[in-house]
Image (cartoon, rainbow, N blue to C red; front, side, top):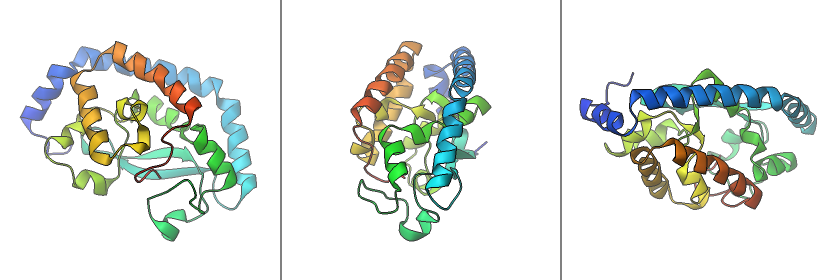
Length: 212
């Protein structure tokens, strides 16, 4: 547990997301991710093979992110960029980034590269819905209020994603994440979940500020 979280922050999160709601949310995450992993297993195998055949490098990309209570974990994606892409250009990407492979461009367009994060959800490191997991240098720049974003598990999709995704500025995304926590409900989670499908089909906001 990160010692930088004050008692008043825990009082704040308990007011908005009490323990019983957390337990139900975790049960939903576990059940849905398990069924999705089984259902999408053939798709996982196919995409992994295509990524391996498309060029040099591993099928999966793992990166350390900051999650619940400031704990770090490795988030998983299908690799969409050339080998050693970070060494060639850092974290920021754009639609025309030459480091993105042709197959990777297709996977990003349809958010298929994010499917391995179902394993993160299954393990309890992430939730289906919540603030997106961030990099350590981004967390280091948080204000005291923004650090409340770490009082819930990061999600595969969230209010910021269905409200503009990477087209939003970083402060706008954090503010929406805090609004999500303040107004948490299972109905809100359901709306974000189904709006996420529309976002994928519309292919809006795939690229933007630091969208590696």
